Image (cartoon, rainbow, N blue to C red; front, top):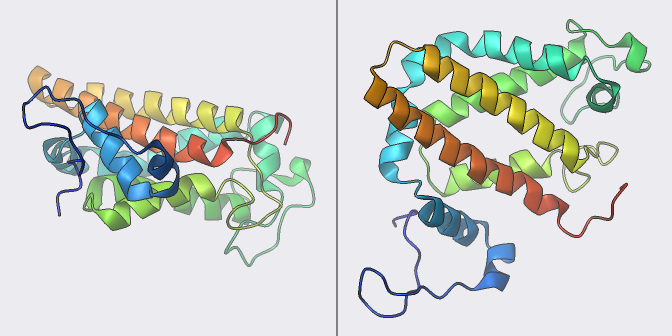
Length: 211
């Protein structure tokens, strides 16, 4: 099965208008991913480009995670979400936001998850299981999965994705790749992050402001 090609089209010409089942977009994550990938132009070649960047990104993941968490802990609006027990964490939770530090066991637990996220992006096949993973990344930050007490507002998720994108793209620019390869890699990651952002925001659709 080709996960980058939509199933339903009108006509056979290259410029034929496609029929999109908009209700299915909301109910079928694979169909949604296929639509986004084709619309944005995220191809198997883009996925291969991301995977090929692993030797350059892999050694810097720990550094990127530290930079991201340093920023997350600078603001109470983001830091407060690390006080409740994180799903899967069995250690001592912080008493309150003032008890948080970059070395707290629960923060280290969350850093490990972000580390694995980067590894998934560069090391996994972009198949149906990857689609489920991208969707779970969004769902886990809402009461729909994990700890129901953790409900990260969309504005904070957008802030995180913006920071992650800026840091990741900076790594690409600093890499020893030639100009053409850098451009190709920047475009591939940019497309992927837009897809990931959609798989986050979809879990906030219909959520009243303030919840």
